[in-house]
Length: 273
Ligand code: ADP
Image (tube, rainbow, N blue to C red):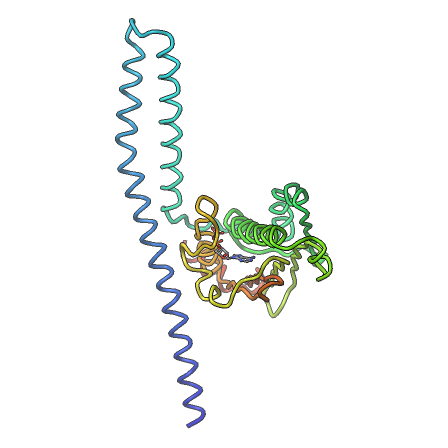
């Protein structure tokens, strides 16, 4: 009885996990379709505006100051066209381009993008990497996108904490303003950990963290898409991502990825292409 009970509980948990994953994929897919539709609809009127302005420009009696305004209109139309292009790119599910990637170098490169600004905000990054290079079969751009998203979230959270607690109080609690990134090998996988000293994640937010559109950031700052996209990217690479937190003290995001030598995930992707 106990054995079958355990078995049932395990199956039930697995079903809940699969269902959550399906809902997430479904939401992302409808978002993709919606953005592609909107981008397509907007492209036509933008083309008409651009052509009309170009026709007007050709007329001889157009005063000089109007020409400058035409240039502004064209510039802005081009800008809107670029935004719709980006939306389309987001909607188009890009197949991962799998190549050998040096993990430590990729993490360093990603950190270098934000290190200077983090320094201005009193946030330091500390890395603990194994000396010998770890090679993964992965899409470097997509992995960098995941790393940058997690680093940016950690940074936002540490900044929110600095804004909410006076420095003396933070220092007394051992605050060093550190984002620690650790890499190690474990059981044929690589474990990448991002540990921050931010405000932490309340228990009730934990279940929604990887859902599309879940954000606690103000409008214009957060989209709530970062972690859901990161989740799909890591799953497509045959890995997993999870979060743990001590509310008020910080959070840890852990990514597990298969190593090149014995990586069924990466081979899967190669075979599916
Ligand atoms: P966004 O950053 O646009 O809000 P994400 O999907 O990247 O979207 O993150 C969703 C939410 O998860 C954030 O709004 C925040 O509430 C929470 N979160 C993510 N990372 C952290 C972190 N390191 N510390 C605290 N909260 C976090």
